[in-house]
Length: 66
Image (tube, rainbow, N blue to C red):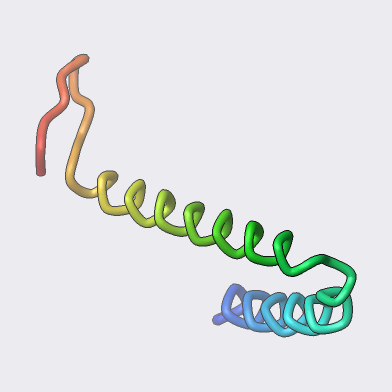
């Protein structure tokens, strides 16, 4: 089915937002801030890894740039 990943991603984002809306009050403000910072750092590392994947290649135990 074409676009199944997009549908699953959209439903997951909506479900996560609703769960966060109802359970967000269970955490203290400091915990919420720490979770936001941790998620932000994870996103930065995933972005760097994605960018580096296209830039650097490992061929015969040597790193070459693309």
